[in-house]
Amino acid sequence: MHDLGVPAGLGDDNSEANSLNDNGQVVGDSGVGFIESYAPDHALLWENGGWTDLNTLIPSNTGYYLIVAFDVNARGQIVVCAVNVSTGNIHAALLSPQPLNINGSGSLAGLPHRVAPTLAENAQQILMRARAMKSRIGKTSH
Image (cartoon, rainbow, N blue to C red):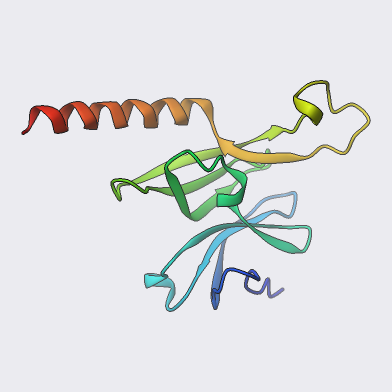
């Protein structure tokens, strides 16, 4: 058994691991209080000896906050629970690693392969359609 600890800087006092892949990546969440009632929750990735809050790896303008990471596969794709911050609705989402380019162009040839999880394109489209549908329903119900 290896204690992964609690991520520094978040003010959390508890953490839990939910999944481990063949690359040694662990996903889970952390928070304050009992696991069943964390407030706030942080979806986490543990790799290379440290925790990363997955919210720091997605664009800040998505309108979603990631509260728990449930699973990670060998490709580094992560299944998370995301809260729509404007409605409070909860959605499942898939984060897929994307290669980072230097200066927005070129390739990663000869450089260490670094990835940053983002919402997969199809997940972004599903969420946008759901928002649009909810908006239309809200306008017709008044």
